[in-house]
Length: 187
Image (cartoon, rainbow, N blue to C red; front, side, top):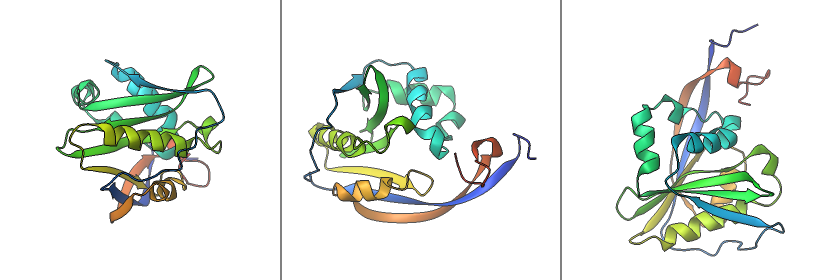
């Protein structure tokens, strides 16, 4: 039996993608009553609630390792906008648009909670992120990255919406064994 303090090293690939002109996404609206709400003047705990609800399945830990002041500055920046998808009165996905680099809108976080996956919501949510990114003043390209630790349909979804591959990089990271399922894969 491994202790919760033990770490495992995972190998993974990060893919960076970009879109240099607006594309035509699928555009179809989900068959549910969906609200997309922009969080305004939100506290860091709300960001972490969505970050963990979506990324907990995919070993999203990086922001938890950041200094609290850095995270607070990130979420409070007027150039960082967070949107939450609400269905049935509760959050089922989110995305963050980051325009702190001139001319670039980075979809820095994007995803669905486990209970929303497989219901046709990911494409709609990504279309919303792309449309809002292009609507921001001065944006000349939209960027996003994903990795092989993320949901296996993430990369094909980005490509289906017009993102093109820029580069890839092989990496490793240590992950607490408590974040792994019995087969040694991320939960």
